[in-house]
Image (cartoon, rainbow, N blue to C red; front, side, top):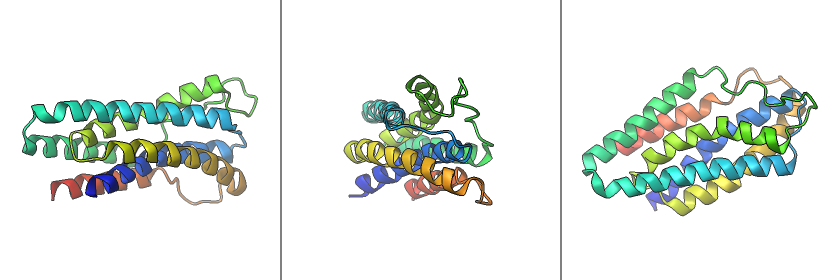
Length: 180
């Protein structure tokens, strides 16, 4: 059961980046249509899934103490990196039409999905449930993009903070949890 919970937490954390990016675009009045949101979600989920499988493949080759140390270390470093990140997603609307096209969505998903690669490998060597993480990534990712975009358009800069730092705090918490 702990693996399912960790998988869902991992999916939630990965979707925070997507939410933050979509929120920022919504705040700039840039629309993310359903097709583009689905494409971003699919690519990010594929990154996470592939990374989880790589971690699962490496698990039998490594001793337990090393697995815990590597996995927790990567999650901790990724959490710190996310806390210090000032916004790695600049301007995804390259053609200036105020809509993220499917082509632009691919570029955006590469930026958002990078975190899923690192977190997925470290989680895969642990006890994360693959199905919970990938299904959670697909569902939460799509909801985060669509919801973030809509919410960003509604509040347009009214929030006094950038929500992307929450992912860093959760990753650090997950890293500490895995050590104990």
